[in-house]
Length: 256
Ligand code: MG
Ligand code: MG
Picture 1 (cartoon, rainbow, N blue to C red):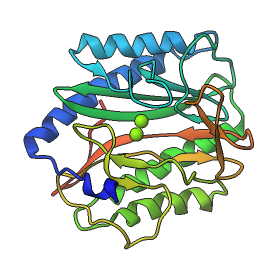
Picture 2 (cartoon, rainbow, N blue to C red):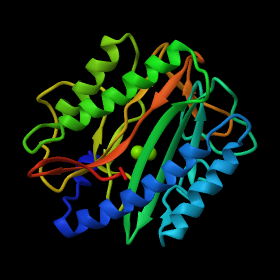
Picture 3 (cartoon, protein in one colour):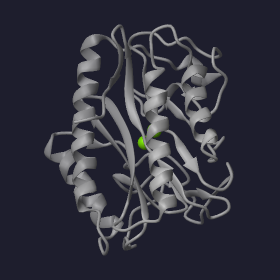
Picture 4 (tube, helix red, strand yellow):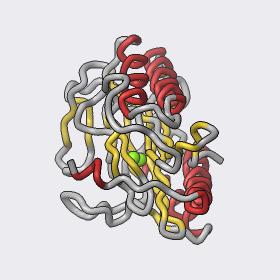
């Protein structure tokens, strides 16, 4: 399939540029994290991310991204049952919300893509557990991103952890290669069979992004035609890093 053909291995120099793109993206996400509190609007968070990215001579990767309508913002902001692709705006964040922020940066022609979820103020035990399991799933997936492993090893590690805790992964939304394009091959689902799929080689760069739903694996797209939410209205969480496979193991590109 086209996804698998669109796989581009990066040189060490290109990985250095991607690391810088990742650092800028991490700074933007960190600034958003600091600003998340009851009363702030998702539109205000969007402006914060955009200004950090532009201050560093980079550009928002999501802005204008093709879809049902060109994507209108720098971040995706999702609250509670919203999982990915939420459009920021006038909505105010409230105490107890589970907020997910996804952000992409283009620097010197390369894209960084990363996301985090966070509870606002006092949150339920369910929120705490969901956040923990989703972040753990990302770490376990990253650990599998080794020379000679296969895509299925990464996918399987994520799925097994999530399902062992009684949660679900969606089938329609996946991780992906990342580089000069935000979405390259290979596709990296959050479910799969160990030992199957493309072999991972040094220079491969993947945006790994476990999305986790409490109720069922099913999702629905809201009326804005962008926001993806759990079909049953149950909570969801999302963590993402862009990660390179190297001779020395996985290299996380999108941390500070
Ligand atoms: Mg993302
Ligand atoms: Mg992504």
